[in-house]
Image (cartoon, rainbow, N blue to C red; front, side):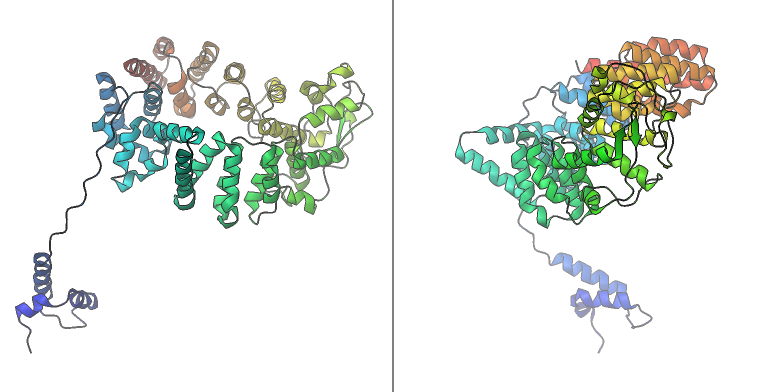
Length: 542
């Protein structure tokens, strides 16, 4: 019997979908599209209006002062252009000076921070409580809910210090919800904040769920223990050395090696004592381990080298990097031998093969043997000299030892080249020193060796650069322009210079641009214009 239009309109929607999926060549479906249109109209006509949803709560009150009008216009321009260099500095300055974000610019601000993770901390803080309120209404902005506002952090700290037991219980309950039910990023953020405020409480929280966490999550949670790391964390980290995940074991070993008083550090010192001895002339005779035994592997040393170096060189570097630096001063002091006046060639090779390298030495009194300079001045078995120095550099960074960092950096500058590819790269050693020292050392480095290896060093120096560093960079740029180098070969340095050169450098850049070739003139003029834009931008936020 032929179905009427009315019965077809009322036929189940699933039947129409089935016929469409099978195709008209497999099942005769006369008027399929007409029937689907009729059914669609019937479905829509038969819908009953749903109850209106509850309106969202009003946006919270904003107590911070509004942006000056010129700064509002500047922010709108930067967001429209998504300026890679100026927007981060603008947001950091506006946040630091306590301004409130304009309501009309909150959507593009949250969009920009969604696309660029480097903006998120400052953008969300600048957006404030209203930004959090707005982010809750749009799934694409949910990331902002995982970045706490300054107000939320202040409330959490107040609740943690409050004498009122009700407030404390409420704060604890909220924290428990985040830890048990929150997204991974929220849990990491919560644990990091708790470690900064109360390291013992952070460790206890991590212990409570450690056994049930995924390996990749355990690794990142373990990284948070760098905040407030102390010997109270040692038992937990020692247990983590037996973790089933290799990366977790390696991270636990690295954290323990940053605690010179830990049992792991003592075990590494014992291994270093067997690998490095004092010769009769006061040099350092190096004989790395022949095998990586089970105890070494438990302490985070891989059985085979994951690098291009040989296994013995790798094992030596791992041992030295994890040995307390005080061990080397004690070793050389205990020998009772003055700093030797002996060449490295007089120390036997011990049958070893390695990357080579010779360390210098200077005669001196035995009382000076406790300083890093005096340890570095001793002759070292040539085949293992580079591995030993790289291990010392890694240890200086890991243990935040400024004296060792200075001594190793002094050696780096005395060389005719920059060996920035090693684990003891100057940029890592510089990170241990105060900002003023970093800038001064980098200025001398740039003046001596130019910009070829300078990018990573310049990144460690905060803005604005002092005069000596600014002058060294400008001199090096002028030299590169005269030598006919391509401007884009220095694009990294130019990018850092846009953020860090003082505004006063614009006048000299104008002069350099007049004297340069067309390619360099364009680059230097743009850099000068950027500096002037930065100056105007920050003045608008004054």
